[in-house]
Length: 434
Image (cartoon, rainbow, N blue to C red):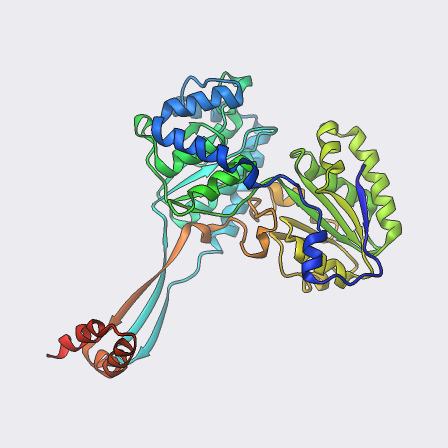
């Protein structure tokens, strides 16, 4: 079912590792032109474009794009008590972790009468994408909304695909999660069109443009976020889920296989990778994966994901090579099943989130760890980070110099402005002393 990649006896360079890591062959370049058309359609036709796109792509025409407030209230009222309790606990944990991410204001005194203050200011309005394709993700409502609220974002809009099973409405559990968090601006729209609506606004339904778009999605959503970047800010390109497990001989094949299968059930394009220096463990995990995949609820979906080129059992000579492989991959989720996971983590540079040891599975982070599950995929962890309160904050500098402090740097300003052939810069300073 899942391929084996044997790299023993090799010390691949970083460039070679980048070529060796298993990847999903689908890229944003494949869907880019279509996404551009969908975005242009929403900009030109607004709500009608959203309705037509839903009918064509989701097979349903929603009765309302903007979800009525009473529907949100009803969803909260009808929410299963066990799910409500779980959401309340998740909200509490993510809120505590998000609050700890907010940097303090700092003042630097550079001279008598010369200060630079760095403060952190939230974006005024955020648009949060909550997936709704092959699964329902009320947890993504929590992971998007709570950090934005912790950062002080005053205006929040949620978009989520209309559900055919609910007559074109947003899934009630997603609405309930929004209601529990006090968000009443929810739109039944998904895919690239929903991203365009957030970026450019749709006046006829009262959707004002946002300053930041966050949230995971499929390749269409991810590509749309890339295309509107510059019009708005985005968090990261969080596409189909990925798990990479580094394990040594102490790893438990049953648990490792369970975690690979758990992430493969998200999507046929999901990636599941084991990297180990123990060939026997790789064999045992392969057997366990095959056994568990055959009996899991979404067995057909899991089988496609595990059989794809993006999933593999990788055998290397040692843990150092395993960590180098992981860094080349830049996984969304990295699990460490080694005798000393904390020490192994010290060898890791690039990962969206790192889960230490057998009792810290990715499923914990997906729901209740307090960490955020909106993480960079497709190698983006090599240069970007997961969603947090800081995503919605902008550092802003306040500069204050009194006359004496300005006098002391004026000659330097004159020298540099003349050197750059921008003498008016120096003149502007000299004017203060004329």
